[in-house]
Image (cartoon, rainbow, N blue to C red; front, side, top):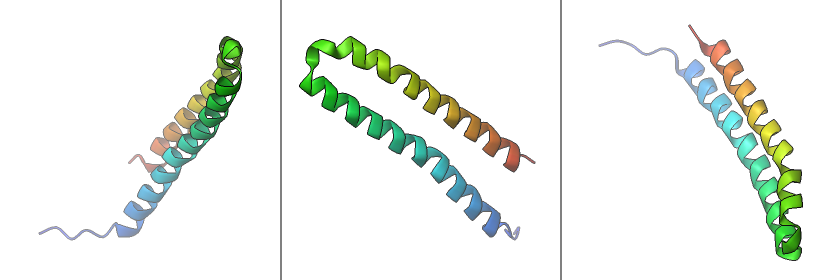
Length: 77
């Protein structure tokens, strides 16, 4: 039987991945909550709100992609 001795590294891997996924989820949730609040109060201005929220969503997605690529580069063998 093979002895597994990388517990510390695997724990760090899991913690880093958890935060890389958690941060964008929280940011998207906050932006979505703000968007739903505005749409509820001013439904006729929906296109304006949707266009206004587009670039923050795109920037969060790009930021997450860069974090995941960096994460991959750090932990690749």
